[in-house]
Image (cartoon, rainbow, N blue to C red):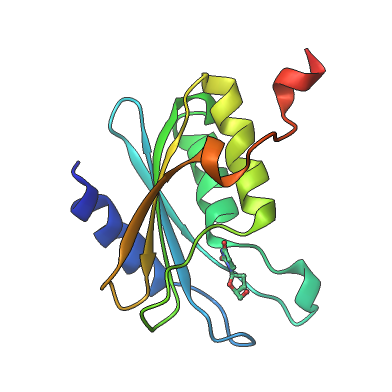
Length: 137
Ligand code: THU
């Protein structure tokens, strides 16, 4: 699947977000090393702090569909305007977990909600000097 196709799935997933409080819809699509794809969206809660992010939602789906150690590429799209949505700190940590399991410097495509801007990062750039499962070996 090419970048545009993966991002299109993330944008589509954002349409299934449950974000009545922030009204900030985020979608995420994760591709495995074998080309399988899962998606997720943020899911908020009346107890605000219990909401989960799109990336965590998609990572959970990835865990069940193909395993965290197969995570290869991630696309994230959020909001409505031209500002790029990059994963929050907690999601970076969660992606780092999958990255260290697989030994892959996972690629993360980040899009603005309106789709006008896409930035490409590696997890090593988004969470330098991170603490992960490798530290517990
Ligand atoms: N959100 C995500 O789903 N992913 C991120 O990386 C950034 C933030 C969600 C959480 C909350 O539902 C809404 O966006 C506003 O913060």
